[in-house]
Image (cartoon, rainbow, N blue to C red; front, top):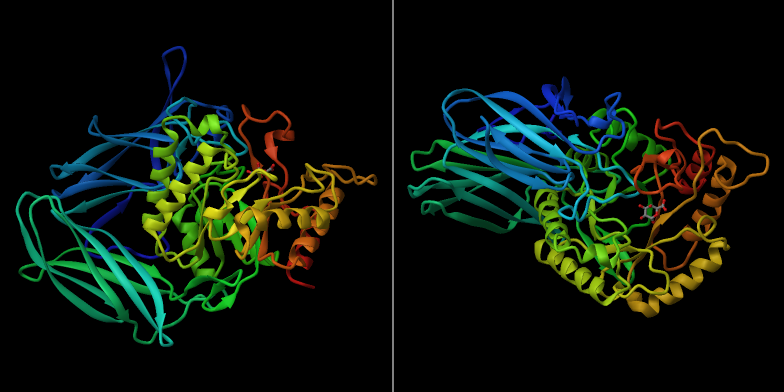
Length: 554
Ligand code: ADA
């Protein structure tokens, strides 16, 4: 399943995943391990390959009908090279963003697709580094083959707004002519009614078509309490009126504004009661099926959560689709966690982090659940060079989407230099875990400093707080790592933050225990980050009921 709704009626699209592929893993002795695997999937979930780092190739067959073939990969971890009939058609870096590659016009009939994936560490990989979550190996999200004519719609972005109490939409679509011949025809956009424009494109030309300020008849507002979605479809017709390509998108009529230290959604202040969540599951790795995503969302809702912080990378679109449908607010961020200045000075870092921002915003622009864009979690915002990177990336975000606020989660206690650059200031704090200090005291000192350090008058979020607990470790002494300790730490942390004047909410670190890279942190028991409110199998720890009671205000 590529999305939770159908995006094309005209363009031919065939999903190639949810079926068996041939997998080959090269061994040191020069032989290959071959087996059939169902994709999406992670190599680390195959018995015997739990700690595998290296390469694997995945091969399947698809049918062409004579059009232009485009291979769409929603996520390959972490570096991909793609081949059609043995010819390389391109590659991509970063597990968590989609990409599309053209294979040209293929003769009608069967063709072979091969995806080579690599999850190894090297200087060419600045974002995937040994870290506090696993960088899996595999085709981790769906793959499809699309067939188009010469002219196609690249994307359709919908930006809702309100004027004199009525909703309108600014729509923008990019149409591309891949052929050499000029194209004459029209494009229609339907949101409620139909809007039509004549178009002309020279050979190999792209055209941006805009519909500013379109009124929305029978507008249905999207809100967390009543998440009503609106469909929009663009169709390109040739001069004879035959449809040549189309794209259906889904969005929500809602507005996010920052005013007077508040984050307003449709004019009303929001208070975040959220969870940080990695895409991770003991059975599926990061290649989670929709059913497992929906299970997580149901648990987060049951816990009283109204928001997910998608750490530390752009999430699967189907998860965002579910959040749109259930009214779950999302903080989404580009891929980066805890990079030092030295790591940020890797020549690959800026191009890779910026490309991730471009892909994330281009692909996820229409999701009403995303209320804020984040960048660079806990990177070197305390240095001159780090600050330049934060400034450039926040500027890039603004240039791609002026309709959402921007932020980053800092951990640079008394050293952060970038708060002045963000619309919302955010801090990850662990009093009672890494720092033995009463939470209220810590928070007062933190907030007093943040206001002086560029945060005055801005909304303020605690983007992480929590404590570790090993599932099943109950102890009358309530020491660290026991479920009792976690429950008490969270009670103090959440009570302090939610009752703190000037704080707009909290994200608990974290929803579920997740796997970490074996190469990274020897001090993580079980090579897991154990700060979940549920363990990796989603079994509740003692803290579950306490967190639920506090978040629900009971
Ligand atoms: C950080 C980081 C998380 C996680 C957490 C922890 O704040 O952002 O990815 O590593 O700490 O568990 O220590």
